[in-house]
Amino acid sequence: MDGRDGRIGVVMGHEGPYVQLRPPGGGKEWDCPPYALRAAAASALLTARVKELNWKSRMP
Image (cartoon, rainbow, N blue to C red; front, side, top):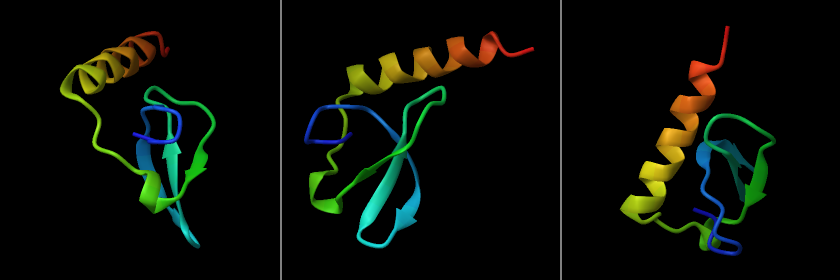
C-alpha cells in the first residue's frame, strides 16, 4: 500500500530509488518511494483481490 495516499498496489519492480506499484486488476503503474510502502490491512487486501478477480473474469 502506498502510505502517502492509501492506494493498494501490486509491486511490479523497482527503478532507481522507487518501487513501481500497479493497481490490482491492471491499470497505470505509479512510483512509490520505499519509505512510503505500508502493509495493507487484511480487509483492503481482500477487496483488492476481489476487484482483480472480477476484472480477470471479464477478459475474453
